[in-house]
Image (cartoon, rainbow, N blue to C red; front, side, top):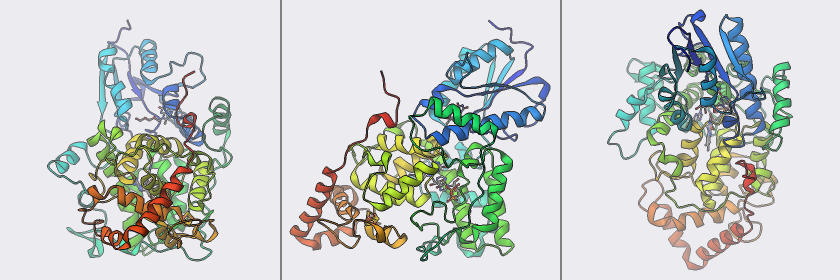
Length: 525
Ligand code: FAD
Ligand code: DLZ
Ligand code: SF4
């Protein structure tokens, strides 16, 4: 066993902790520290991540290791294809303990339950002290959230968000919200203008490091979902800052009003496209919010855009982080609506005549990204209405998006889109017919289906699926104050019309081909 009394401090840095301001290295002496960074098979394959997601994480890790070395740190970096790769975080830490004989391990808590369970074993496994530090890149603490949530039957983001506004002072006028309102969402629901396009975002060409990782990923993960052709994510802090500069210069003004708009073939619109960089640690979320607030103060962006952007970050992002840790591990098994249907194959191939879904899946494959309203009201709405099993939908979202980590993906999928938690997070299921998509996008104009046709051949499937969903969950939803009134419309239709809706939905559901399980998880041979 290694002698641990005199050695350095070993600091493992995980793939989504790529900042020099991390609690485990901030203020630490460089000559007394070995930083450990590990590309490991367990993480790369616990689901079969989109190829761009693996390239992004490995390339950003390799660039960050270089930045650390340039700044004088000692970095033990394990590449995926190194001969003695131990395959898991715990395996690699064991190897590093053997090699460096550290007197202590200091590590920042991981975002995910799976990894935390493994990390909690380290103190017993290794002959040195193990300290797991709070990830203070988040504004709230878990204790704060747990206190706030105690005794609440329903946890609503809006109230937690107000606490975060008070805590940060963002958009506050003394103890009142700037402009008089906490939330300007009512001004943020504009449909797209005809022919609407948005400014090009910066395109980061792969450098030698990224190119090497692209080759590795094509070689080892060639059968994973998605294309690498359009890989252009920022992989360093400098690139991420350039992407943020472009957002604040060119897109924040229109971010709010067009937040819910969708245009076929326009993948970015006025969204920031910064989630990958924020989640990796390349950008500081609070700093971005302060920049947004400054845009408002300088008269460069209206309050509804700035408040909307800040709410996504110190509201939703912060809230789902805490909700995840509050609700795990049962959140991953939750299935309040008893949804059992398999995920349709078209989620992987994009082969469907439903134009809104086909375009959202095309963007997902091309970019490892789709914007929020596509994830929520197209892809998510379909999964909810069709009654797809939460476990299959969770796997899909975790695989396909470059910004996906379970702590952010799972609350959004299980609780926000599928209502699988029975309404702890959302006050009602986000169920909508084709009418919503028609209002907020130009998808329906070129679609085989018609949003105004309710049932039968050529009718938009969302229309009959909507009523099929409402009918099958009547007992649960009829007393919901936000959605219950819809049942008087259903009752007024009469038996014949109702049956037409139900038959139409059943006929459509019968056409769905279940997905090949090979897409999401490694198959046992
Ligand atoms: P913008 O529209 O510019 O928003 C600004 C920032 O706000 C984002 O970068 C992100 O950091 C934050 N944000 C916005 N909405 C949310 C939200 N609901 N939850 C948490 N943070 C939010 N986001 C992820 O980062 N990873 C995921 O795995 C993920 N899965 C999602 C799954 C579903 C079903 C849904 C409905 C949403 C999911 N989101 C996820 C949230 C959101 O869709 C993405 O953060 C956003 O599309 C990223 O693009 P952007 O940076 O252009 O965001
Ligand atoms: C997502 C991911 C992947 C694909 N690979 C790695 C890896 O090889 N090494 C690493 O440190 N992190 C990786 N990650 C990100 C981790 O999954 C993420 O840091 C943890 O899940 C957080 O709990
Ligand atoms: Fe989607 Fe229906 Fe519109 Fe086609 S008609 S694009 S399926 S909402």
